[in-house]
Figure 1 (cartoon, rainbow, N blue to C red):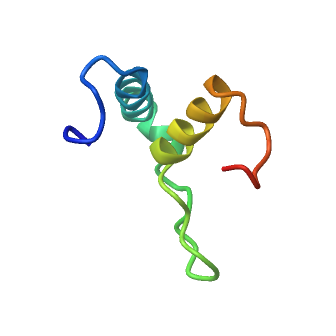
Figure 2: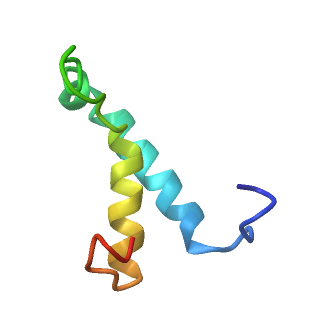
Amino acid sequence: MDEWVDKQHYIRLIDLLADQFVEDCAASFSNKGQYSIGRKAHHPAMLLKLYMYCYLNSINSSRKI
């Protein structure tokens, strides 16, 4: 990411905030996605980053993501 994204780009703030939020609320996410049936859950920080990025860029359709 360091090579592709400018040091002052807002995506770096999103990355930092989402990681910190999930780390601070780790107990809320510890039991999610532990089932042996079906697909493994996506990491909560990744989903939060995607949601925040789409919101800031006015992307409101899952097809546009």
